[in-house]
Amino acid sequence: MTPEQAIKEAQEQQLRPVYLLVGDERHLEGKVVQALRAAATLGGVPGLNEDQIQAQDSDVEVALSAARLAFQASRAARSAEGSMPSVSHTLLKEKGHS
Image 1 (tube, one colour):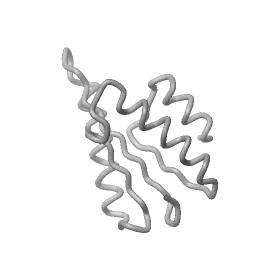
Image 2 (tube, rainbow, N blue to C red):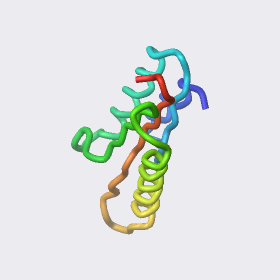
Image 3 (cartoon, one colour):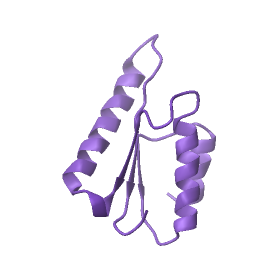
Image 4 (cartoon, rainbow, N blue to C red):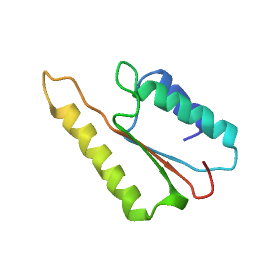
């Protein structure tokens, strides 16, 4: 997936449970994070269901645990009928990038 595709998904409110951002272009990374954050928090409380994990600050188990939780929350929201979905989104970033 390209950064442009991720931004388009965000603009269309077609978010995936987890995004892994990898690359050297911090400006482009920032644009993707901004678009994803805006879409994920639309109509809600910013930061409430958001995990942003920096590879250099964490081990792989923490990242995998957050990703599993996001997938479970997404699956539960899709299967719950008649209730407002509570979706968790996780941003995983490559080591050395902020």
